[in-house]
Length: 104
Image (cartoon, rainbow, N blue to C red):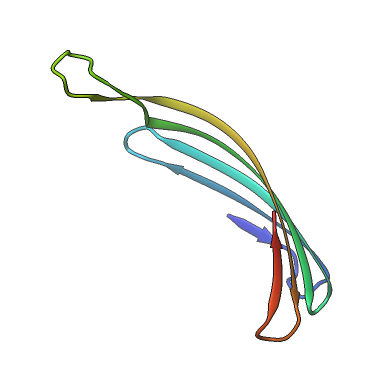
């Protein structure tokens, strides 16, 4: 799901919520919020913050010769993860065809 304020305003806020799962048992939940400031038509800045909580049913761990036959076997395990990410971006348009974008 996605909710946002009026895209024509100088200050905008949007939020999103995503959920996905697989038959193998993997689950991914992501929520985020975006703040956008556009004081002039040629300049725009955005700050995004996301939180992801997930479980990967089959995460590769290592390759090991577990049965002594000289061939490596792939070892997999379950991975629980909590990730917080932040992105900052600003764009300035010199002309319609030339812009400067800074991304962090």
